[in-house]
Length: 352
Image (cartoon, one colour):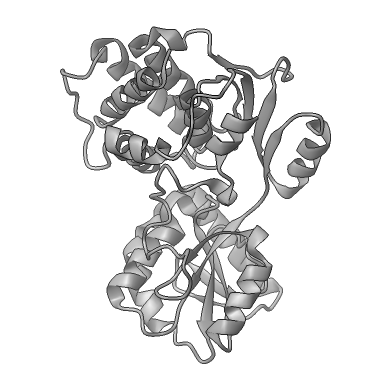
């Protein structure tokens, strides 16, 4: 199977996923093998929702629509154009996936297969329904994928390299356990936003998408703000109010109530608006329904601080702060060439 065959298969997968959008689920009879897979995938979505309360239909569809937008010829060719696929021996690559948001491990899965390797996937129990079904679709539209995709819940064996994502604690275990294998080991990271006080209402409203999408569970979700001294949060609270219905969702509300009680009993200073608490804190990882913030004196000092702590940060949302910043509202819409932790997965796979 050559590279073009692999690209064609993922484009067909993108066409299949294009039927599942946030505003509607609409069957397209021109999609290959739709009679076999459309209703079955709707059932897998239902199972995913029932199994994991954080996987609402809204969030699953957001993920599916994002991937359908990414998987087209233009994007894939732009992504792969700089690599040399001619000097590679096919190997077995193990992937240990997180399960914090729907299909969070899909980019690694895609990268392994598009690079010509076989994949051995160990999924999180929190996200185990969607990807195996999509793998079956890939095997149908490109039969040469059969035998190159395997899922397991057992001990990983018979692999040549590994990509593993977990917490800081599990990462230490991964580093020890896989010390004799080529590896990419991902740890906890969080995303931040740098505000100046000059943001427009539209920018702050877009920022709310970076904060609340997936309930803030992703590493690309903004969990902390950096603001100038004497920053007035009124405009921020007004702009994020569009997300206030989130408090009607039980799991989110339970976390909000619990964390609010902890903060009140601990007599922490905080601001809150009935569905979000903001608290001054040096940490980057804020609990659900909470956003941390801290002050900065000069943007140059803040750049030095964030550069020195780059290993803790996934994305920086800002306007004119740094070269690698992300626009407000765009953190959950990464391109294929936007790699987690800035580690080039495809380069790793082609040189391992």
